[in-house]
Length: 351
Image (cartoon, rainbow, N blue to C red; front, side):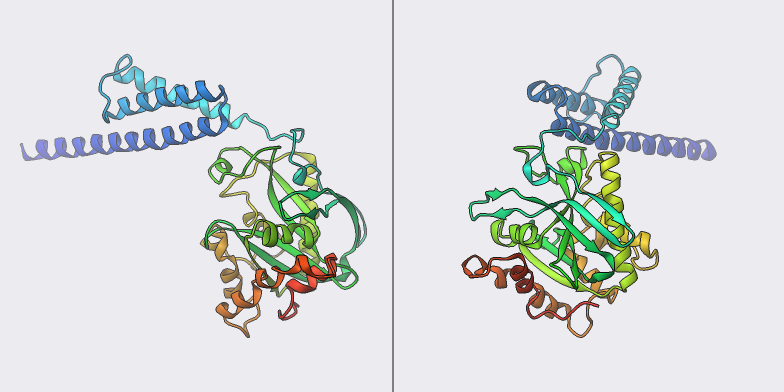
């Protein structure tokens, strides 16, 4: 009798565990699907919201939470749930990123290049003139780069949503011309705004922007009033050159095929990590601060990629450019070169 009771107990325990797993699956999958429908709105705004409500009630009935009864019977309802969810996955993953949407002017053009040995001509480098009200004069230009004249690499972090989240840009210094910045961004359509949640659900394509610092950095520090920091990075000359070429390879990828931006896995920080990892797999160990991008400077400091003669607290004070750029609009010299010199004032040179 004791053995029978023990077996029945463990059977009941196993069944309870399976029911709990099923309930957890229903909760997580329903939340995911409802968010995907909310972001994508495949049936239009109204009908998509109706489907979300119906699906939510159906999911609650399966786990018996506030809703009792069945659509048919429990087994049939479970089969219906799995079939519909499988079809939803098919719909979601069949969506292809596109090149031909009505793009916002900031990301309307795609970077391309011609390379002859170490000489590179970049096409569609952004160099907008920004005004106080956020409007801008559109200008795309060519830049001629000698890869042997790269003298430094800087990581620029722009904080727009608290200390944990920052947009990451990478700027290259040259011995014979002004710096050039690369930025991995969402490719917004006209009138579209960024949503971190939308970035999980294939709402935005991926864009690589090559830009003048007075465009893409000034925009963030002086127009959007984000808090911007510039950190010179210690990197051997061979790796600086290889990193630049990785950006060219990324431009090739995006020219060949549009790709989705993902808030977690394919964003401005993780893609930079992937590129540096491709150059030197031992250089960047994985770390949670690659996801909490606001802490990226601390991560680089721990790797000794940032000058160790200063504490991290001192670095944040020195690297903060907003205090230096606040009055740039009133200065007589409004050139890109002047802006780039200004944001490096007081910083040790990178090597």
